[in-house]
Amino acid sequence: MLQIQNVSKSYSGHQALTDVSFNVPEGGIYGLLGPNGAGKTTLIRIINHITAPDTGQILFDGHSLTQNDVVNIGYLPEERGLYKKMKVGEQALFFARLKGMSKNDALSELKKWFEKFEISDWWNKKVEELSKGMAQKIQFIVTVLHNPRLLIFDEPFSGFDPINANLLKEEMLKLRDNGTTIIFSTHNMNSVETLCDNITLINKSRNILSGNVDEIRREQGAGRIALSFKGNENKLLDAIGTDVISYDVVVPDKNVTDGITNLVLKLKPDVSFQEIISLANNIVELESFSRALPSMDEIFINAVKSANQNE
View 1 (tube, helix red, strand yellow):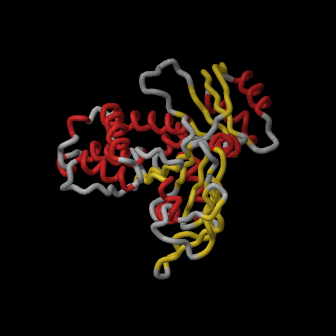
View 2: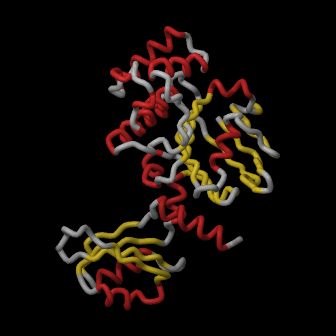
View 3: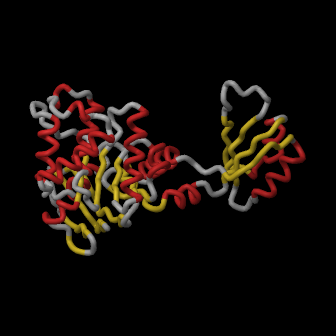
């Protein structure tokens, strides 16, 4: 769907993007991640033809992205763009017409979405009367209303309570299942794990990690094993000794009082899981074991830290 090819951009001596490349597959949710100021918003603005790259190019469906392609893109910015003095329904209709929808089609689709989000009573209210979460619902609706092939959501859950955040997640998954391609920019790594198929992580203007979420977690989790057991933790660690690079004690739920200890071990490359499991069986009462995949939060932090150290 979208190919980012060696894109660079600077502003008044500040390098916002440096030779960034990655491909966004069609029909999935692609996470665009990175710390504040990493360059994510600059890239999103380039995709939306709001600004242009200094070097490099973006291909949309195999051809160079042009202004004519923007009608096939829906963009929900982090900074909301609703006119506060306009009425909600009037404004939603205005944005739909800008995207090329007829008045009748727009009204029909808006009615469905307003009923789905339970906001029909707000049609004649002014935007300035809305809460942040309510305004976000309106912005989401006008972003997806014209059924664009590519949707870009920048921190879409900002201002939402958990119930409405889940409502939006469900709608995003429905859009994906219907073939829409979604770029999802967020700081919430839990959302990345539940929603994204692939990710790119940008740090200080550069792409430092790209790939499939499950594959990245497996690669980053190589050599990690989780053990749950009853017995002497120190005795087990002494027996394992130098086979372990590092370990973490996972604190159980405060209501759990059954004496189970949870350890996550990072093993040296030449040490097998079977060796550790066999050793543990002889020293403690082993309850369970599994590969310990890192969370996207861990991967995000470690990747950024490593990139900063290697500068």
